[in-house]
Length: 178
Image (tube, rainbow, N blue to C red; front, side, top):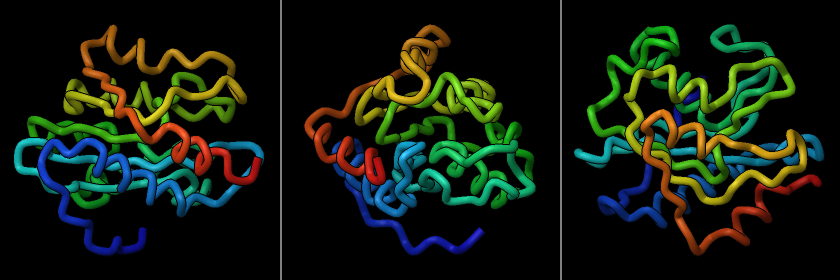
């Protein structure tokens, strides 16, 4: 994995600024008519550093550390933490700060056509390490129909908050290549 440039300094709890940064990551995703361009940012909400970032297709499908199929933004965030700590992705919950939150431009997926584990399964598989998921927009029903990712996270006790005011921008970037 390549070394990421330094992250911007974002004031604590500036949810719109974190979402803007996630959107800037989404803009790096290669446009395609068969997927959305999504960005994600993993943050220690207590100390405020950005722990990792990711965007759709940032890692190649043949990457040895993940399931078959394309990489989603949230998955890339987790894989970067796994690499930093030399752990399997499933064990990063043990090294994440106690108040870790995730910003993602689109609702985490609850169904994958590739056979890859869903982003909701990945979040829940971390055993409560991710406390809140901040979402820019719900997933449009274009590829997998209705996505119940937010509901499933809430039912499992993960906080889910919508960051309002950027919906049009996020959708424009997400649909690049459609």
